[in-house]
Image 1 (cartoon, helix red, strand yellow):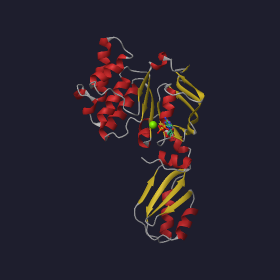
Image 2 (cartoon, rainbow, N blue to C red):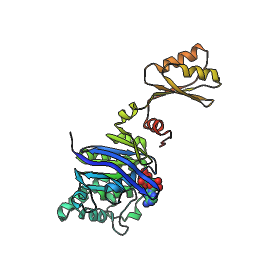
Image 3 (cartoon, protein in one colour):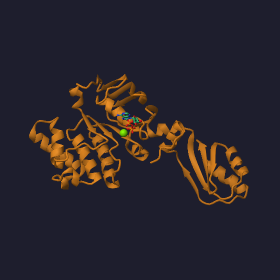
Image 4 (cartoon, rainbow, N blue to C red):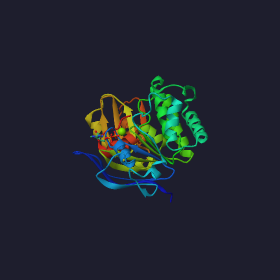
Length: 313
Ligand code: ADP
Ligand code: MG
């Protein structure tokens, strides 16, 4: 059993009448890239801020590296690297000096620090921009600087709160690849996002949050097995009658059919040969159809089934 890096039990955080985090439980192990996935306002940042003791909370316990976290636990804090949702760098310092400043909070040895700062610069690909001040950087480069500042001291736990929001695709890939690399080098990562694809791409386990609650937890595969949808089949067809739609609903494994006049969308629970069964029916009835698509469940299907809402990318 690997070591617990973060353990959150029954966390409750209220802002006046609003319950931002509602009895949340999380247990994050060493070596994970743990994804907190949820729409805007679901409580991800609040959870992170409680975890870091930046916010007081109403109920619950938080342990980091097996010990109780508190505002004065500098011994625990020094093992954490934070990349906050809002970029936090000094406007008057250059790229190099910004990273050096944040690194100096943890590493006093100048020679060692120089190595670490240069490594961080290379890591996020800012070699050509070391003398730039933040306002001369594009949004994507600024995000990379924000990341370099958070990770230069090589922390054991790295927390990244929506690091790819409003970032160009190139920087986005650079950031995602970087996270995987940091993890391979030994860091445990907590990654929050409302982008399903990203979370699916890099995370070892995912907690799906909505309204401060943890609705489901598992690997991508486990989450997809929790839901009814095994396959969604879309068929282009015009002028389907209500009888046809009714008949489709009666086919084995089909549990939901919707039709917009152009395309019929059929949700099937697990099982094989759904497409063949459906197309045979259409053929028997002499109903003509166009293109046929079949999709395996996505994290959006998971979110939709457990909340009734879309989590659109
Ligand atoms: P997320 O990071 O998932 O977008 P947040 O943790 O920022 O969600 O917000 C969770 C809920 O708490 C939202 O409804 C938000 O409006 C509310 N909230 C966040 N910060 C504050 C605050 N300082 N005061 C009052 N309400 C807040
Ligand atoms: Mg947030």
